[in-house]
Image (cartoon, rainbow, N blue to C red; front, side, top):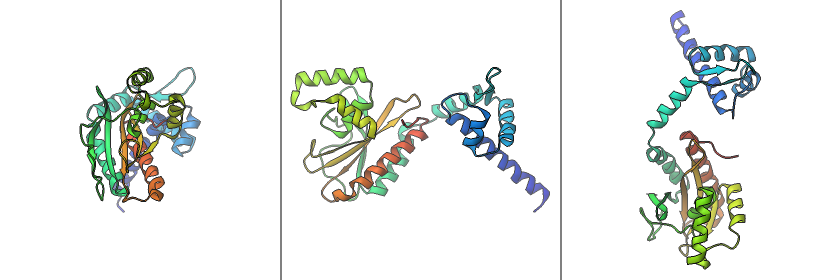
Length: 257
């Protein structure tokens, strides 16, 4: 190997390691010590310190004069905001959802909270496809659909509670008796499953996707009919949760603990 090629490879490796250190700082919930960063980046303290110094010089990180801890600086924040401004949420989601459908073979829908309620904005047919009257533009019930229940559990609490009170006045049978317990359960599992509640013969599993501020961005729901054995539901739900988590992180969001 020539000396020039060797120097080039060392340079590329330095960039890779530098990004590893930057990512380690970004993954912390606040300013972090040299020890914590080196452990997260899986590097020695001395090596980590050299990269931290370079990142500070580049304007990507800053160090507190009082505590000596490190945190993101304006350069990293500008870079992140620029990336977010160029991101098309649904175009980004499309790749993840298509992989989910390919893996599970199940029909999948993506919904957002519209003026009329949880609204289907994307539809991906599985194999075999599900025959249903649902489609793009369909509005799903807040409490009688897995999708709606995830919105109720992770959406704005005040607004969701207001919607629940309205439902209790207009359709008492459609409101659960213990909505608080239901919300807590869904929040803990990050998942809701229903069978035949909305459409007889169809089973649904829904999970959330969050944005940079931790707000609910959209809900992804897998639908299965009789062609899919119930024994395969758990594996499909695991795939759903993993894809929603990956999609959340790709949007700059943080999956809740």
